[in-house]
Amino acid sequence: MSKLHLYTNSLFDDLRQQQDELADRAVSALIQNPDWVKTINSWERIPDKLSQDFSKEVTDFFEFYRRKDSSDVRAILERGQQFFEENGDFYTALLGFYSLPYCYAFADGAEVLVRSKRIIDAIGERLGETGYFVMEIFRPGAFISDNRAYLVCAKVRLIHAYSRYFIKHYAKDWQSAYGMPVNQEDMIGTNIAFSQIVLRGLFKLGISIDEAEHQAVLAYWRWIGELIGIDVNYWPETSKEAFELDKLIRSRNIRASAAGQKLIGALLSYYRKAVPDAALASQVEGIVSFFLGKEASKALNLKSKISFQGDLLGLFFKLNGLKNFGAKKSYTTLKRALDQQQIQQFGKLMTIQLPVISRS
Image (cartoon, rainbow, N blue to C red):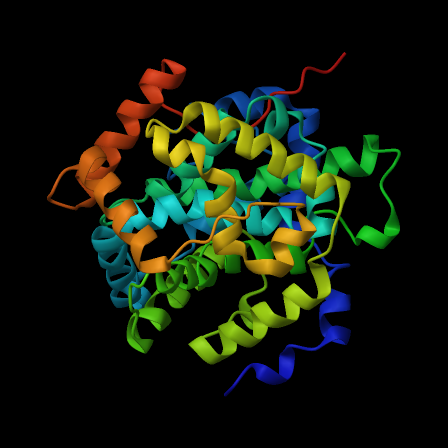
């Protein structure tokens, strides 16, 4: 049954007031028990037997993942991982040049992001963590023969809940007009940015994606969305539904904000310093503006006057990928290159760790 009837302002007004009770209850317990956080951060995967010291809230949260069975979606997972195997270099580039700036153009959602000092002051590390998340969820065999990605999704979900907790308890300037922090609409919009918007970016680069591939990527992110606390009843299954969902979210959320402009300023400044290719680094504002289009670029106050042709930019990305990742594209070569970049830049590989809050 088509989901187009769900994409209405009234229903999405409701979603702005909905969050993720399972994760929120767990974080309330973790805040009171920082030693439990240290235990979770020491895991490589969710263990078969959880600590008996954990409260019911924390145990219930991780039991959600232990009960997940990927056997019914194995074909979906394999297709999604194969798509990333073939397009991972473009995929990761578009996350940085299109998906993240796109999220910054969502004024109310940007109010959450700008309140995290790490996004502004340590943006490189934050991007590294996002890259780690994407590489782990698309790792060959993830959720099928390799269950490490369940823990990665659980941590991302808990970090969202930490953000909600700290805004609720400490952000004196939070306004009800923003909606509830890290609400269901914002989470769905972010999931769209990491799936539908990447596919749109590929199209802008002159790379054709057929309907079967489109649906495969959407189905993969439905699985991820459920694991990170999204109400997937609203998740699109076809390119038409994805187009209409994104259209609705854009119309509701894209507008100028000081928060969004501060975020994009920090991102572009980082790119100009960190992107190894000098030609690419000098054109980052124009490239981001090319992908975003006029409406989102205006919201973020991007003023690039450079006109790009998508096929030529796609060729440039391809040549840059050949230089960085080699002629044989694969998950392994991409991960090796990204790992080397992180070690050179940060002196370590980035992972996702829950914050340990010392009680005083």
